[in-house]
Length: 238
Image 1 (cartoon, rainbow, N blue to C red):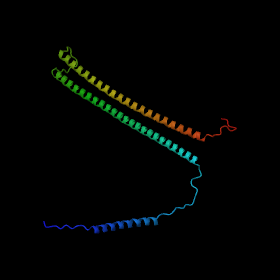
Image 2 (image 1 turned 90 degrees about the vertical axis):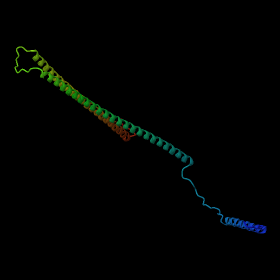
Image 3 (image 1 turned 180 degrees about the horizontal axis):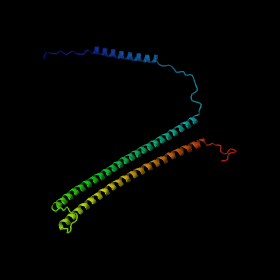
Image 4 (image 1 turned 180 degrees about the vertical axis):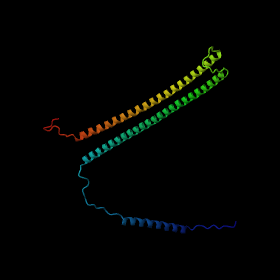
């Protein structure tokens, strides 16, 4: 590092610069104040005129109070109508869901009954097949006679008759049970159809009743509007 030279500050030069800066700032402030005074707005002069409407202050206050009350009643009425419409929509949606669930339950019940009937038929067919197979095995071990009249029927012919009678009884019992199942299924279908018809008639009657009520209310309102007010005039007979 080389040698350094220390230069002493010039106090006179520093003071001159500070004085020049202060004088320049003061000049700018004076110019700003002079410009504000020159551009100051003058007094406002307005032509006197009558303000307000033809109504008094009390009447205006009364009208404002009435408008406020009407707005409150309108808001309350709108809120009640909104709540009523929302409840009606919710009830309609609940009834719709209940009807759908009822239809699903009825279809499921019909399907279960059909499956149960099919299972019973399959079980009876299997039982019939096994019974016939058993009787056929029994018949194969018995001698067959072509004559219709047997003087002294033996134990073999008696056993064959018994097996034939048993087979015939099983066949008749099976046919009888199938017929009973078909009749029961038909009765259930007729009962369900009758129930649906009754529900449809009840809904139709309720709709007609509601329509008559609405029509009667409309006619009553129309009659009240068209009814003369001066019923106490001479010549009025009631």
